[in-house]
Length: 175
Image 1 (spheres, rainbow, N blue to C red):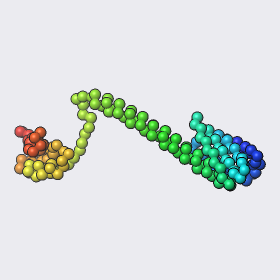
Image 2: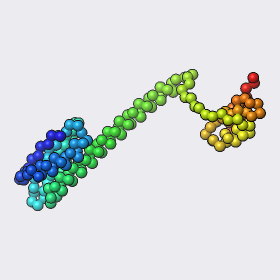
Image 3: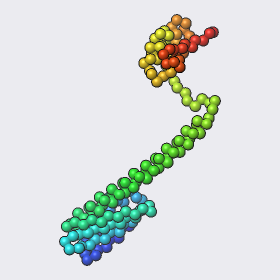
């Protein structure tokens, strides 16, 4: 991070210079290449710290005043960090929203596909009576059918809900 520290009606000591650089490391972790302009001044009994940070084409600014210069610098750093996190979160949300829109267009393309198997489900087939299969299907209200091995015939059968929602159909192979 490139740092420029200016003092107006205030001499910038080595201690203040080191303190500002150390505090700006908190901001530097958010960016690869950034610049900071720090202006420190006194007006009456107030110590005013003004920090501009420029990074990735974005500008962040914080100005605070306090009786103590170090406290004023700390407040500025907190404000800048909040602004940067907010902007970063906003960007991430925009990126996420745009990726969701991309997914929606992919879903539209998938809905255009016809006569193709686009999903495969695997499940265990258990031997049971058709009456037990009805009970098992009632346990899963979101399922419309259940495949099972009929204990009486030894063949694979399918029990399914009929459109009336009250009755069931049984699909049984002939051969």
